[in-house]
Length: 217
Image (cartoon, rainbow, N blue to C red; front, side, top):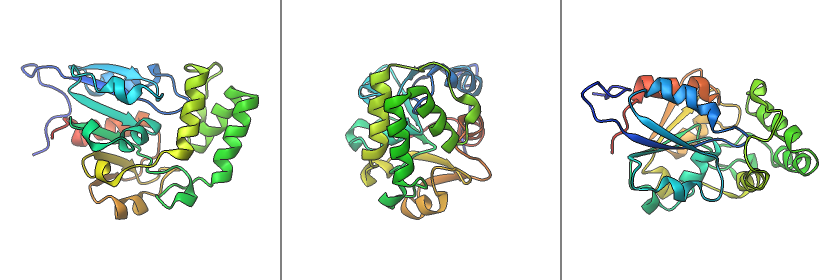
């Protein structure tokens, strides 16, 4: 039986570490996540070079990564994923040319990188348009410029490890504009497809919570 998505009044609260997506402020996840798991506590990290190591703090019972955050988790060695963890809207490798289910041609990612050097906020708008979340394009930088640059570069270089995906709980919308869910499912049998959903965490995370809410080993 699938556990309840939220802790019951008699259940001990759990502490989650969340690694967010590129170009999104950590606060953008707050309302959605807190509504899905209101009895638990949540800490949010931008997807930077230290986010996975920060999420290894032993005070966290569950680690969750969204989009680039999921890629950072899945590209980590499996010994860093000993605790229950979720990969939501996972990216195995961003570029279509990598053959890992990515739908974005390398030239499009490079266009985002090129624009980033000239206008970071314009680059964010372009990327979020690719991801189908135009309305979330920020007018200001959502977190540190150097961390944004690092994350954008990581989209082009990081690749998920098969030994890490095998130990992960992955959830991907079948209409994700960045990833071919059927191709990823053929490569990662433990992937859970979410019919009709796209890359938008505002619908993805409630779907994960409603169907597979409580994480277990």
